[in-house]
Amino acid sequence: MMGLGGPGATILMKTDFDQIATFNTPLSRFFMESNALRLSFETSARNATGSVNADPMAVALIIDPSIASGFKAIYAEIQLEGQFTRGTILYGENRYDLRPTPPPNVNLCTAASNDGFKRLLFKTLGGS
Image 1 (tube, rainbow, N blue to C red):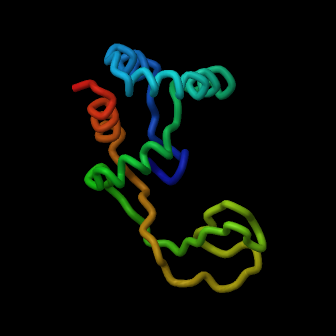
Image 2 (image 1 turned 180 degrees about the horizontal axis):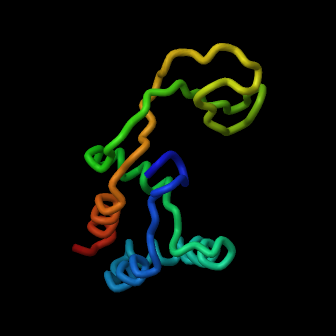
């Protein structure tokens, strides 16, 4: 996973969705129902081969940090009712008011195992 949605981002292919459907557990059925529109949109509107899953990857990294394989120390702040944005994470160089960028305060995951993510997801949803 490179950044959020960049090259190598977490992708669940149509075949992964097909495999999850075979689990037939309450969690797998919930997953399929709640992600049907996402998969349909990604494959039809974006002509993608699957769906990008940045938020589930973030949760997977909390559950199993060993899935991560690369980090970059950056400065980030969350603007809930900020001057420039609302509900957005600002990170890196300050392009809004050109104040000097403060020292890093978080480690951003820049690379992670898509296979590790899938193993954890499949196990959680009732597969093996």
